[in-house]
Each structure stands twice: as structure tokens, then as C-alpha cells.
Image (cartoon, rainbow, N blue to C red; front, top):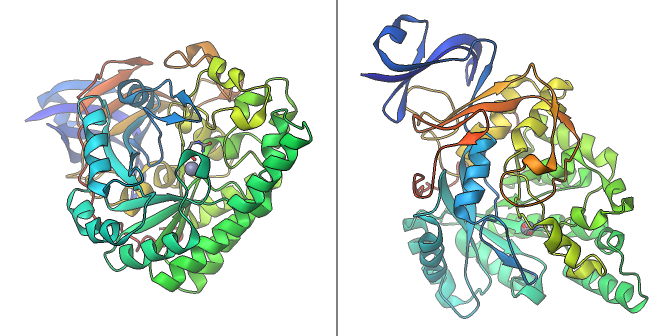
Length: 465
Ligand code: URP
Ligand code: ZN
């Protein structure tokens, strides 16, 4: 029984790029076809002249979060619908352990918030904020619950998120032998907090001081420190939202010492740079780490090509233009974060493939395959292969059009990429064999997605794999 054939597209698989049909039965890919299956299929969608990629895997979203006194515009339904519109069929968001509470408590709470609301399939990382004997003893049960990766904040004590160095090292020491991976938000709290206090005392509170109080050294030092801890603990480490070229070097050096070290950058670090802080609306570009220099961008692309960076995630933390503006008078009260789930693919396609920095197979690796493997979701997710979930995105590379803030999914009111001319727009997104977005219209709704019980991270993905 064949339910769907996506016909005649240029299909990107782990074995290469070929003109073929993708044949789907139920929720799964049967394989590639050459036309014979069309007659038996319930539905045939013509992808002539289009590129067919595996559905995107975005391993860093923050839907339904409260941060710095504001609440994200996207809840799980709207955020995952925006992701589907952008060709992403799987996200990994975060459960939060509140201080004084257990780890599983945080996972259960987040599943209540997400399970009946997601439109994509989804997994969870666990943010650990309180490391003690009871927490560490709970880790095996966290793995049993399908949560195999952790995020620790090396900053944000004011939000009760930060873990200190001793706690981070102890956590890595316990999580490593279990096969978990510990990721970090790597910024040096001492440097940043001192600079913020000095800037505020001096009345230097315009949005551009956000970047000036979070200098490159603060990120680089924290990346290096986290990797040294991972080395000592024998734990796999992941650097979330890396913005600096020197960070790529630090990960590569750690790997040469035998550390299982991985990194991620985000669409905004590739597409935007610190000149955004000179704009009148600089408050819209406040995220942490901040935007950096153009030279960093080229180093990040090189890191993606070499495999030192595993993926480009969105770090979607969508606050509306009004919410961002409410803190504009004083940089340290602007909620940190930007939207990104919807535009990850056209940004990557345009700056990556169309501008000659990535091949199509590299795009598929970065957008889907590597994050699926590293985060324990392969072979179910991440590649167009027989037996995998039929998660597909069809993109149009002929048309180039600007991002228009008003077209953004949901009432965000701005896009950090506003006016940027992009191609590679998703025209069709299929999640587990079901068309979920077609020409920008999303048809999937709350509860259509499923929780992914993730395996342990596959840290055997090697540079260029
Ligand atoms: O500015 C950012 N990155 N906001 C989202 C929260 C985080 O740190 O990942
Ligand atoms: Zn972070």
C-alpha cells in the first residue's frame, strides 16, 4: 500500500543527490522510486524542479518560556507550526529542573506542557540547575524517560539557572559514564556581571552595551573551561549557540586531545553581525551570546563544513517587538533571544548553498542528519532512507524573495532577517507521511506531534561525517 509519492524531485540522501521519487507508506519511507509506484499511490505530489531534503531537526528551541519577566510569543503549538512552515519536522526543547526539585519533576512538567500541544515530533533536553547527590542519582531514570542530553547555564544566576564550576564538573562526572552528553550555555558570569554593573553605574544602558558587556573573551573562556571539565570527567560535551570563530578552534583542539566535543551555531550568527547594534532598533538584536564580527561568521561556516560544528539550530526564543522594546531603554532588561525556527532553512540555503559555502549534501547533514544522529534520534529521523520516518521538506530554489516581518508566523511583529532576500523557501513539509505545511499554510495542529524517546547520543559522528 503506497500512500504518497513525492515525484520527480532532486532528492538529497546520504548516498548523494539524484532525481527520483520518494515513496511513502503510512508514516515511513519505503525508498526511492523511478515512477512505477505512482500508479499505486493514493497521492502523488509533483516536485519537478524542486529539491527534496530530509525534514529539519532543530535541537535548540525555547517555546513557552518565561525569561527576564517576559513570556515567549510561541507556545508549543505556534512554535512547532512555525517550525513546520520552515521545513523543520522535529525539535528538541528544554525541560527545567527548578532548584530544590527533582529532575524527573521537570521532565514530567514539561511533557504536560508539550505533549498535547506540539505539531512537530519533539524531544527534550534537561536544564539542570541544582546538582546534589539526589540529582545525580536520578540521572539513570532521566535516560529511561527518553531524555539523554543536558543543558547547563554557566551564567544567569539572576534567573536561578546558573550552575557553578564544581557543580558542572560533578554533573559531567556522573553523566559521562552513563553515556549522556552535557551541553553548556558558555559565557563567563564573573566577567559579564562585573561589566554590566559597571555599565549601569556609568549610565551606559543603550542596547549596544549588551554586546560590549559580553565580550568575546567571556564566551571563549567559558567554552575552554567547559571542554577542560568534559575532558577530566570523560563526558561528551556540546556547546550551544557558539558565536565565535575561536570557539570552533577550541572544540577542534579538544577533539585532538580525545574529548568528544561538539558545537552548534545558530542562523542569526551566520546571517547577522555586530553592526546590528548600531541600528536604531538594536534592542531587537539582543540575544546571548551577542552577534559578533564578520570574520567569526566565516570561521563558523568552516566549522560547519569540517564537522567541528554539528549543526545550525534556531535557539528560537521569540519575544514580540513590543516586549523587546519595553526593555529598550536599558539593555540588561531586554529579554534575550530572537525568532528563528521558521527561517533556519532559507537562511542556510541562501547563505550556504546559493553562495557556494555548502553543497546540498552538507546542507542536509547540517539541517537534519547530524543533529538527528548526535541527539539519539537516528535512524528514525534525519535522512531520506528506507525505514525512516517520512519527514520531508521540498524547497523552491528558483524564487528569491525577501523576508517580510509581517509574514512571520504568529504575532511577533518583527524578524531579525527583515528585508533579507532569500531563496530555498520551503513549499511543502511532510511529517511522518502527512502534509503539514503547503505553500506557507500550516495544516498540522496541536497534539499531532509525538514525544521522541531519544537514545543515548551517537558521539561517533566524526568531522565531515
Ligand atoms: O539569548 C538567548 N540565547 N536566549 C535563549 C535562552 C538561551 O540562552 O539559550
Ligand atoms: Zn543558552
